[in-house]
Image 1 (cartoon, rainbow, N blue to C red):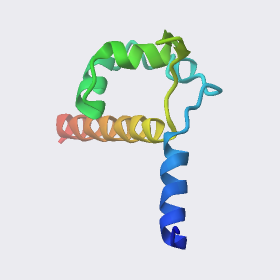
Image 2: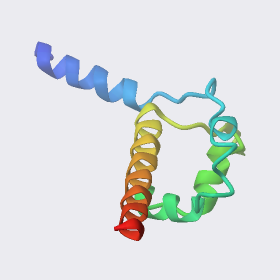
Image 3: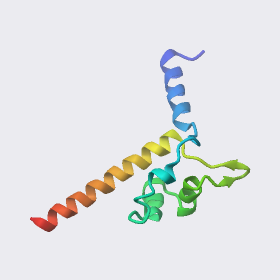
Length: 97
């Protein structure tokens, strides 16, 4: 028998692992892909190689299934972009002070 808080934790974990094939991440990132080093993002934030990231961006079929980001991966990608943005902003400030 699962206790209520265990069920909630299980549900949150299941939702975070749900894939989001409906979200066109490549299109959303379109303006930034030439600016960003996607290999760096894959390695630094996901501990994966660039192929893993490009498969998800391009919705490649892997092992017979279309690849897609999970909710948790989308959050991690968003967090990584925020962190990179902050680093760039701080670098810009250093140049003018």
